[in-house]
Image 1 (cartoon, rainbow, N blue to C red):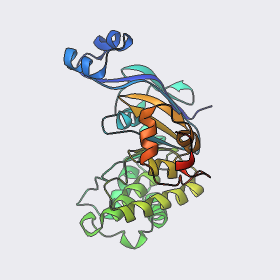
Image 2 (image 1 turned 45 degrees about the vertical axis):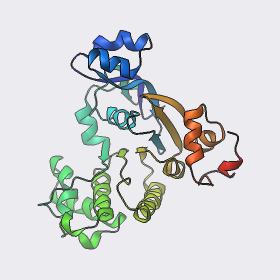
Image 3 (image 1 turned 180 degrees about the horizontal axis):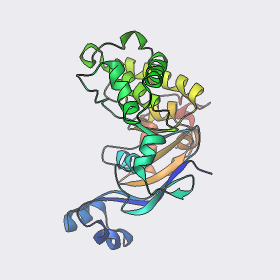
Image 4 (image 1 turned 120 degrees about the vertical axis):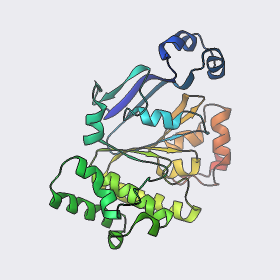
Length: 278
């Protein structure tokens, strides 16, 4: 049984999303729909299941729909047609899920500059009305996980970009959610810091075994982190598979271009990418 899923999901931005369903069904392109109706078809016909303890990476070019699809899982982007399910039951209360089951790490951590590192991490726990002692325990546990326990009294302006992103990760982990949504959390960082945080995320995952949906536009990152990879193009999922499946059997020229741009070796594959069938 999947922990969470979207099924046949269309995500449409505009005043009257139902008015474009017939255009989608007849095969109209995103551009044609936008020109004729002013609506944006962000995601079309997407189905994706998340299973406990896995990392699924959504990847594609800018505008492919990957962030829009990720935000459907916590209700930030409502599904116009189709459904979102939690443990095979349609979700009717996204606020409850966001309080108890799902946390999110954004591309920029959006820390509150007037709150210390401790207080930024504690914010969501305060909304849950937890006892101060429990809040303190959870904050320091997760500061230790991300290696920032000595910075608890510092302010965001005193931290580097990588440290701020660690605070954002600690804030999400402190919520003790089963599911983490991570929207390109490392893309704005320098390459060395990015590589370090990727390794730290993998180490944390060995211990915590969260279910993670991770957005990236970088196949090398997807190959390193993902148990499965879903590649989007023009709002549609065009291939889902393990790193080995994606690199050895790209379904079309679009996926093949991603594979061709990747590094010489797939981090989770036994073979060289250049030796795999194209």
